[in-house]
Image (cartoon, rainbow over all chains, first blue to last red):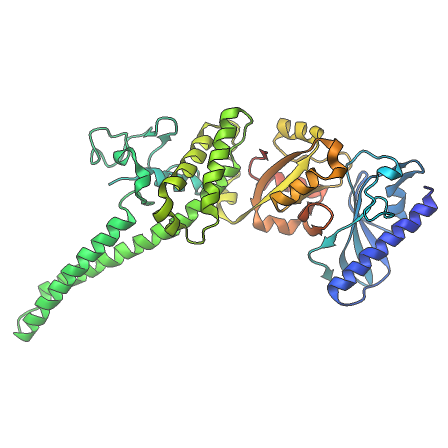
Length: 117
Length: 307
């Protein structure tokens, strides 16, 4: 999978995380995203989605196998999304989490508490 | 009478982890220090009461709850007698001061006994928590330690679900005693147990957190006894239930990973430093600690138990 296609998959996963959060909160939240990135040599760092993409995409033939996502906060008109790369050894796209099918490495978590500032 | 073993257990569980009155040899069941009360329970001053401290329960190492209740019943009978006498004296317009003093003394003793009964009930609940803590510090993979851990856990589980620990003692003293004894014995015997830094853990509510680890992380834990940062710096997830971690470890996705379940206990308030998630496709209720919080986690956690 090329990076452009992976970007679409990532954006779809981010939007799914937002939908889950909106359902939990009972309100809409901003569609401007900031990623709190964990893993791939990065420890809890806030980055733009495009910068996060550079970290989470390896190559057309090698992928991190699980990348967790969850909305954790809404601050100053931005939605903060937790993104964490698992320690599993990277593999082919078919070896990624892929539940439900088509989601690739992206795995949705639901934060117990979503901070609204 | 002296039932020091439970007093010892409480003392050991308390912040100092230094028994207040006497050490007991967990293998022989006798005290390693002299009974400060001398020879009340027999000529051997290194024994505890009739070598069976668990048939009674006295966290202060003095009297049992039953004995205190019996004492209060007798005191109340005395009080009734002196009250009747006082009424008679008052009716005859005789001085009542001596009888009043007697009644006041009896009331003081009843009040003192009531406080001690209350303390016994309170301490019974603390012991349940204390035993829970001891369970968490039994570490080691040798067969004897595993057997101790299993037996202790089986017995402890019987106690843990009870709301009223003192009621449990009344009905299941022997069973709980076995759990407490075995866990404490293991605690003393295990050279790997670290006593340092556990005072805070003993002093507040704790939560058990579970982590499924790969063989390489298991090697790291065996070498360091800590959850160390990985090169990816992604932090670590811990499931909040044993069931959850088992589900994750045994999932088809992790089939080739040969995962081992570990657990540790942390002050419940420490969970506030992590992010709580529900992982519907994996471990269920979980907490994630970012990489920069792992050193703090290692400072407050109990020794890691390898399941």
